[in-house]
Length: 348
Image (cartoon, rainbow, N blue to C red):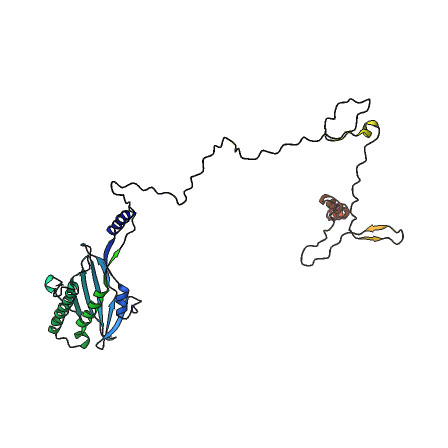
């Protein structure tokens, strides 16, 4: 029973796997010497004493589920000449087979484009590896077409003559970097047992039954009973005399003060005296004649940079009193002066 469930689960997982065609760009760059040029986006190498540069391939999905790969290849001619450019385009089927290939060259305004080489059934010559045989046939036809068209342009520069060989070199390495891989998708599959088989109930690891539910309304019978409360001991009070009633004291806690009841005229104990005030810390001096202690005023030191620390005594005379004293002091002189002026004027 468990084996059949395992097989059903594995079949559902394999059915949900997703396969796709991918290009290992890092492996492709490593085969060319590494992506070290143009800020890690290109690889430079030498072939037949000529310098070439290959950029990272651009990959886009095809409508049929495959991929389309395009690569830019440059022929580096030096500082005083413009570079030659080429493009290599490959199409792959959803299962990883090479569908078609095409390339073009641009040499100082002249453009050479190869025919669209397709990997048909006619290219298959090996039964053991038909895909690889088709890829070899496509690469061979592609380079042959480019070389024949390049010779018609009467090109004699060595780097340009070997440009189709550099394209074939990139074609071989790029084909090896294309891989068909399967990416499993993690999905929750629900497996149902076949008809007629008994349902298997899963039980926890320990077979101990769950504890019984306890009713919160009822107290736990196994809890120990609370300890018995001991009655408080009666307070010790003095026996009542003949003139007092035999009723117990209302407080039941404080003993009766018999001495205070017997002698009510006796005054209560006096309250404790407050502690003496602390001695003053003000500076004092002793008079030599009388021997008395004379307190000294608190005089602060003179502060030349600001206001005086010791405030000056407030003036007792108001503004009106000052004006009256000035008038009384100089009023007689002013009156005498006025009289002399009047007499001098009258005499004239």
